Image (cartoon, rainbow, N blue to C red; front, side, top):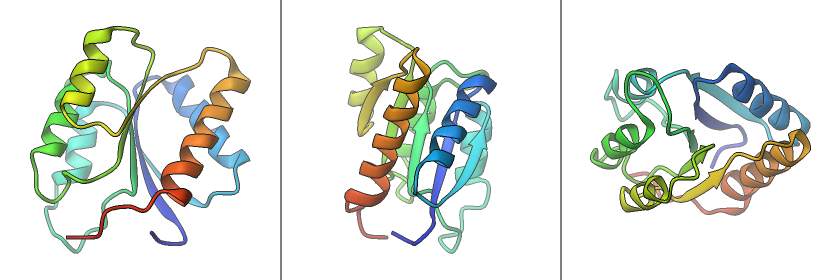
Length: 143
């Protein structure tokens, strides 16, 4: 883990992107935040230049209901590639479908969190997951 972590947020809803950015601004974490507004942008960011010299994100926050390629397919592609299969991925979604949760874990997500509707709860959740995944958690070694 570096002093400044790279966080990839894969989210098409501009309001949720803004809330997530505000939550990280309120935290003490120093993040380099990359936004992908759909599944294709996320895949392109991760795989467009498949050089092992390019840094990968330290954490991916992944929505499921995305245009062009849905979040479950993005997760499937990430986990199928040797360079990205160990990246920490948190599904952050409004979906209450048990099948989405089952598929997400089946495809290898590390955590599945439903987005709180309340602003203060949302900010709290984002700050807690940022602290856990980017400070407390020991990531897998680079391969």
